[in-house]
Length: 243
Image 1 (cartoon, rainbow, N blue to C red):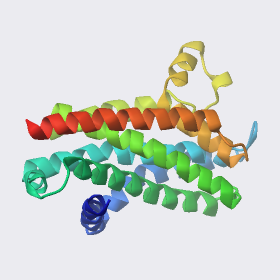
Image 2 (cartoon, rainbow, N blue to C red; image 1 turned 30 degrees about the vertical axis):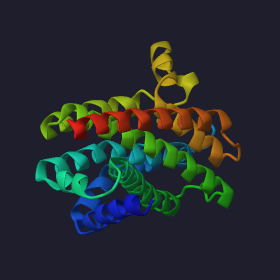
Image 3 (cartoon, rainbow, N blue to C red; image 1 turned 120 degrees about the horizontal axis):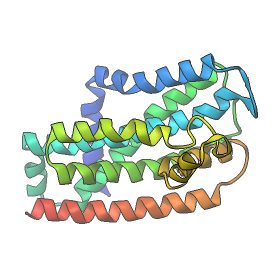
């Protein structure tokens, strides 16, 4: 754990020293929150549309952070830092665990800023236990997408290819989920896609937590997904570093 947190501390310090990177990662979620949350009618079919769309933007923020995290490991590899980390007397898995934990924590920090902004512009204030459940869901989802992004980065091995992949999958995944509309408002073909989209499970879970219902099924699915993806990522990382 000490070795893992040493890598987390290193990445947090590096991230905090680039304020423009911090602001740029918040630009898209803030734009979605302001335009979708305020442009749509204040009263929606089930209440305040801002309350409906905020969970999806929180999940999108964590997803974006997870996907961008793959390039972090890639830059370490290109700049030679990864080889130096592999030379220290620490398990290889601690490097990967530190990277995934940092990416997830960074996503949660960004999501917290988005959550505060949503409350300022009119979203409802929830009970403390609802926020705890939301952060648990976002953490598991962050681990899943951090491991997913890192795995893809290890397979591609090229920053330009990974940037193209990130741009290719992020928006389709967001639109093909329950981010903007519920299942009963979707066409049939989109309903099937949304039902297998991991974003839908995370968004639905956050919405259920915000409504006062504990999303046991969605949390169980996210736990299985995050565990399986982390195992796949660890296997690929060990093969890549040993090779």
